[in-house]
Length: 319
Image (cartoon, rainbow, N blue to C red; front, top):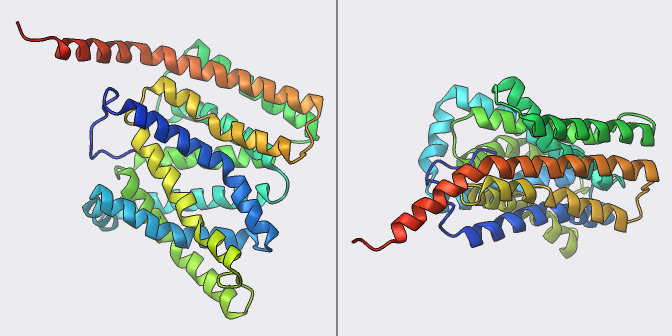
């Protein structure tokens, strides 16, 4: 996710609110399986949920663009074919990620989605080294090795590769790589992506409604749940974009594991099978997550120290 360039990062200003925003963002992502499952119990298919998600995210994304005053950035994105092409690719990737995720949580595979989002940051680290030539230290290699060990153990536990987990991690990782290459602020980029997807989503929703198979207006619960797809899509993405510029990397390193941890709890609470071998795979993944977060904290210490020294110097009265 690319964050807005409209305002400079300022870890010392509003860090408490930024931390709260980050926690809320990842907790929303963690409870989203319950939202999609509630829709599934009403007979709403994964494709209908996805289509409504693309449609109702547009008003929310538009509101955030107006709030951030990024209308000019949206117009600029549409005027530059290269940026628009990259955003079209990122839109397809995020739509693919959403479709896999919605299908998985409504098919009793919440634990597999949790595994995917646990390994996603570690895949991002590996991709950063391969594509952007970012340096990986020994702790980084250890984190990646532990994650790889977790995937191998999970494969043995379920009798094959965890396809759903890998598909979620790779699609979201690829989305992050593409968005990193596009010089478009977060809110503006999200709106462009939603607009590119909304035409297909609207056509599918209209087709379902025309043949009497759609759930919009069928009942108050179904209608409200479908309309909630907008805020459940746009709000956490914007909270993330706002928080990531104001809290240290070390804090973000820990926060990004809140979502899959919440998903893991949801999967276990719903009675998904967690054999000893499968539990061991999560132990490997958690080990990689701890090492990843510790490495992020260690890398951020010099910047945090410099910020603290600068704040102390500014607070001293002039002599």
